[in-house]
Length: 113
Image (cartoon, rainbow, N blue to C red):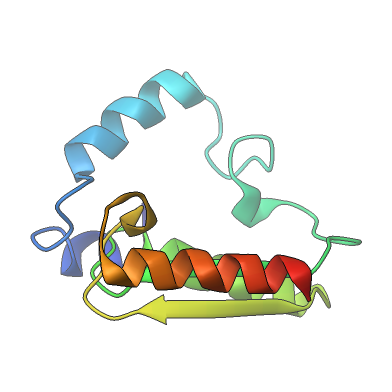
């Protein structure tokens, strides 16, 4: 939770808050080192990973992490496509909107390529 989006998008992501992230993080990490690859994939080894699609909304609190993950994958030589969806929020794909349907179609095409 160190990227800019955690503060820049705190008021515009309707699905996730910093209070929620802190609470879940405490239970999940239980005082362990948050930079452990066992806790955060951002710090893992991506050698041999398959091609990866990352979808993120531009209003998403976790946008910074999505961008960092993409950068780490690319640095590791993993083919990675990132789609940024304007004005969308965390897990927007779960909501019955036109953009959600388009995002799901994109996922299907990615898997079939």
